[in-house]
Amino acid sequence: MNRVKVSIGHSDNLDKAINKALEKVKNPNLIIVFFSPKFNPNEIYTKIRDKVGKNTEIIGTSTAGEISNETDCTVHTVSIAAIESPYINIGVGVGKDLSKNILYATEQSIIEATKSLDKNKRMTTINILQRAYIKKSLHELLRTKFFINMLLLDGLVGQEENYLRNLSKYIPKETTVIGGSAGDDLRFERTYLIGNGVYTDAVVLTMINTFLKVGTAIGHPYYPTKKGALVTRAKGRIVYELDNKPAGKVLKDLLKTDRLDHEIFAKYTTGIKSIDIFGEYMIKSPMMTLPDGSVKFYAEIPEGSFLTIMETDEEYLIKSFKETIFNAIKDAGSPKKIGLIVIFNCVLRYVLKCHYGVNDIYFIKNLLGEDVPVIGFNTYGEQGRTLGGSLGHYNQTSNILVLADELVDE
Image (cartoon, rainbow, N blue to C red; front, side):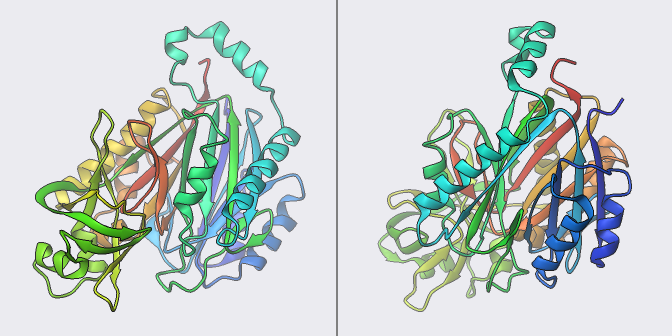
């Protein structure tokens, strides 16, 4: 018996993608759609809404590449997941004007999401807890996740850290947060979000309350070198000086290159070591050099931090992705049957994969079987928690969510 039904549609034709996604799932709780910016987002939303009716929550974003179990990653396509389960409660909230009033946008998204979650209850939390505590030991339930917060943010307004800072004031510190920033095929012009409507300069917060086993993991394909520099002058995402010298010049010297572009930053990037007990290196990617010699990053760089040069190779790239998949499955309680895998994959990690000719979907199918449903997209940054629990906005990382086709009391 299926605890969750999932169907994937992926095509360069919108109607084909919608029809395929709805072939086996007729009354979905949730539709997730990741789409190329070549498509009209209003047309995407309207056509899906006409097919599923008013009771289905629809979320999605424009991308820098679309992922599904049909293909590792393509551009100029639409990837759709239709999800149906009596064991999932869904709440969707939209925070508008992200760049103008971050506090209001955060509060707006939380208020809307919690109201929506309450409205869409198919199974109450008390039922979930009662059944789980009756059938499982407390030890087995310690890592159980009953609530997931999934984020889709505008990837061009640079408000991810500010949103996370505000969000963390409203949710418990142990609550799972996972997500990705919208892309537009590296045009850097405009991104679009879908949250039961179409938005830009916004955040879509999806609260998932579930009795299904669910897990997440975050991982990147880089290891530290012995090279690096101290951030001596920085503000937000702009680093002006490294070791009291122009940041651009120092980076070029460290990387032994005359040019700094996304191809260089895909293979060689920078990381900051976390101060928690795990001491992980989290990737904070350079984006471009500016005319004054400073460097703009895809994430905030704290003044006084130490930027370590990170590098990789094909073997480590493959190994790290496999580990991230296994960590997400373990976090879900090691279910025997997977219902859905959602991948938030940095576009610069995609550039790196292309350099080595590595195919993530090949490894997923090889490890978990041919029929595991997968959906995802190439992002402009990823949100999640480190092993030590630190919530942040990272780069060149894979964030993976595993939704099992098993209940937490099984």
